[in-house]
Length: 433
Image (cartoon, rainbow, N blue to C red):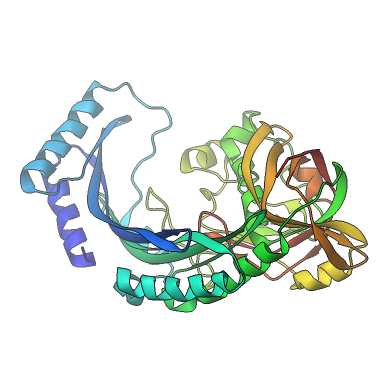
């Protein structure tokens, strides 16, 4: 699927529609992954597909339908289904008119398509992973993980003349180095697979895993912690839900009444910038509105919330939608420097099984995983058993003492976040592993 074919398909669907207002979105994707366990490649998988969705409207009565069959007959059928649903639906008070063609002039040019990412074959990935396995085995450990690559295109068009097209590639490798009594983990993400080094990932996972063997007990309590970027990303994903303006104004998030106020520590800034080459985003949102750089939180002050077009009009605000990517600025302090400045604390590799306790605080709970280390007098002293935490994220982000260099991390490649040094992080219980 390319831009010309996508636009031709969208135009064909628009011609089929009898509704005065029609919006079409379509996409195509392909992805592959090579997985390994206990030093052996266990699986190569590949998938690809395409889909199209159409929304038809008469006034505020609207309906949508979708299909993964792009044949002529299927396109005609999906348009008719959308029309029938629209006619049978009650008027939607939040339905907004189509965005006009001039919005496309605001679309940013972002470089996030790298053909060599998609050119990697299972054999290429296997060669990289063989070298990674050797690196881990040299430390007396076993390795499991995956090397994934994907690419997708997304195109939009409507009966008001708007057209938009974007495409992206992504690559991710994560490896867990396991010993008899402990494990280490590392990850890299990039749009361009050529920027990643599986052996480097393996070396980091192996280093953490080797040091994590035979963890000992440590009492629960409050500790200064140093979170690697993966751990930072995992926690902050629970914070951005509070940025929705409508939910906030209706009293459903912890941000109510906080717009324009200093809520977080002065060294915490969270923003979006789709043009940032370190973490590029798309040029438009789902309805066709152009994306742009936005400061959500600047030096601890809540500067913006995410307004849909409907809620922005109701509240006389400029629409923003939600974060296209999540960037947390850092001061560039190395993790080793943070360790050296810590009298007593814990180094956290990552978290897992994080769940919301109270979204109105917001408080979350979860556990550490794949390497937790006691720091004493500026040095890593020993590995300790994993611990469960309960934390108020707003309070936590008022206790940040140092920040590192932002890195891509997390399950979603749209996070660019630093390591954090946080005092009085609250651990509520210990585990047996």
